Length: 504
Image (cartoon, rainbow, N blue to C red; front, side):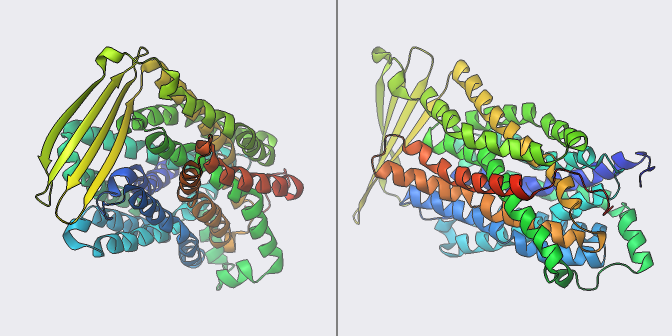
């Protein structure tokens, strides 16, 4: 392996990365559309509860990822890397397409959220088997001493998948009217995934098996019981636990804070127009993605440990100042209102229940170019009256670029912890149990500790606001800060900074 040429490795990288990127796209399109989905698959009489329920359903896909890691990891260590992550690709694509086909709550009632939950669980199982296979496959093709660099290309796929999901949503919104997008257009990004999955399947079908695994299988040194060999062996179990509590747990919360929580925070807590958030987040992701490659490459030179631990430490120290700056940037009390441009429009509209809605739209403009809309909908019928208030802030150019910078800094933290971690995990475990052993700590760290973050942190923010806390918007940060702090301490004490080449 040490003399292996990189000839042909770009084919391996592109085939693996494309499929993995599509799986991330499929998985994250749900989170990117969480605000819209909450109005489709859950009762509309309590928007906050509906949004939290959507985040909980989003999180459910993360919770089952470790089970997917165990199931598909075992298959990957027995029958091979290639066929296993082809199966995960098809499972993910089918579940994503079907989510776009599920009728709304108004049409089929309780069955709507139930079907979405089942499909979301299938997505989680598929992703649990995908990442470990792709990372292992690329690492086993890469020359010794360059695994950090080559596997970092796989690390970019999660961010690229999120970016593409945002761009597809923006393109769909621009092609349709707001009413069309709200009625049926939000389903289009789910439907598009089936085409992407089919193309990726055709590419992956022509891939060869990992040479390292093929050699082990030929020599009869593969494991007949990867689960027992991975977790029943005390020596190997020690490394599984170290990978989880010393690396992936902290990496998971930093990843989901810097990208998904930042997005939800701007849309719900800061009330910024959804399309503007997608746009500025997309810019930050484009600017930050090359740093995944950089930190992966750098980890080959100076080791994985201090780069990953440095990313966690910076996040721990800077999250609160960053989010305070973000929140204060669009705070209307800090801006000067142009009073003569304030206006209220009142109109009556029939809703789907044939009752009349009184809609009050309050518009305000500010001297720095910020525009505020407050839409209050009052529904009156024989049974009850219901009032729903929705606030939307359209930010100016200066505020937009400041928020791009704030998110970009968080993406840098993500790149530091995430760029080197595939190589770090692959190097911890021997070939015969690598797929299984590395997949479990990765998906527990990301799927459970990271995946639960948007729901838990949003819940903390809502509780803080209800309790009258002046800095309620910072309450959600305690979860990632505490988890990352524990992981940082364990990692600094127990992780070896020497890159382990003996297993490949």
